Length: 363
Image (tube, rainbow, N blue to C red):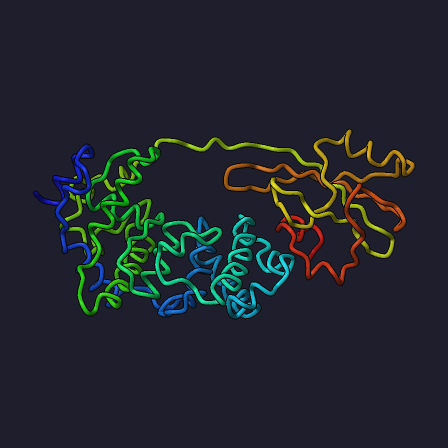
């Protein structure tokens, strides 16, 4: 039974598959010659760096992550430094990277590692998955790249490479099919041997690099791919058909009225956003669902003159935020909302704030 014929029969159990060494051998050799070497989190056995990069790269472009990674490691050089930091400090460095729950999970996980493992990362994917915010693929990336464990990863890039290579056309919106692809990924790992740790590092990073630099989601460069001669999607001339995931997340829209309340000497009223919700834990201008609610909050302060600025849209992954800034000048003894405080400009630099708020404040 060939790998290709097995992969085109989604009803076949993964245990019936025969491992094909071609994929692992080609990916390892390709990575040794053509793999990326210019990222600060590559070519390292430091699990802290690998972990941090894996989390930052979730649904975020490499070009964006690069600068954030360098600044983050400079401020928090190891897991102990991250654990000792305040969440506000972490949010401040993360500001603008989005998906702020990732930063909160990083901070919590760092504390867990320091308290539960004396600051030393567990060395197996199974143990790593027990840590806060570390899923199966991230755990496997750390374990394979840093400790040579024979485990598969399945991030977006690897999922695309594997699905195209074996012609896996089952709908990954269904959990059973996702589990099956995990089984298939495990079947294609490098074989056991004395040099397994080295081959695992090349294979894991190579699969990620192939997806990022050759097997693009759109217009893949099949002519430069070491797997092309055995790739089902390439043979069929249908790389865009793989992977299949039918469930689409419906985009939402929300209008938010932001009260830019400032004093004559430059203090601005900020409050920390509650959890759960958009920008949870970050400092933000006073937030209202509509203009009427904003005006009602100012009635007891004599209904001061308001200046409504042009609205603008801030795009999140699954939601569009239509932001409506409204400026007002108030005295510093005024309490704008039930919670919050006046912050002088010198303190803004040390606060974790959403990117559009930082832009409004010129931070």
